[in-house]
Length: 160
Image (cartoon, rainbow, N blue to C red):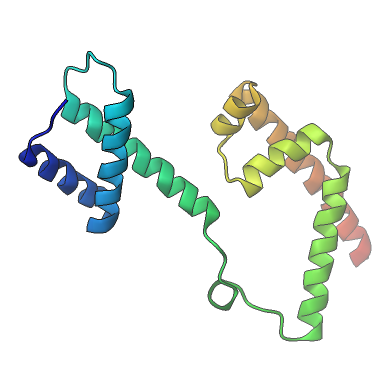
């Protein structure tokens, strides 16, 4: 399969529209072309449309991956504890999370991990675990209520 210079220019322009950066668009186009030429079905009737769809899907995948993996810049994004009280509160929060984590079953920890740490949707978790989406939603709902009930009651008891 061959593409004209005009086709490649149009695809690059589409990539720039997606990425807002010419260099990133060029990399996106190059990687998509390599994949297309290596794995595209022989009976593709609209190769430009097929390639644009590949570029879009690849862009979405890369954006999600970078969004999930962006390093936290402590000096920009987080307030560092400056007083002993703030440091104590931070340690208490970490201990609370560790205590809650120990209370969860392995299946609950798995769902919480995918949901909270990997930032997956209920549909993505369901697909990954091979269970219905409703089951994931139900488990998250019950878990939230169970923990809210337990810790709001224990918090009230400490305040009395």
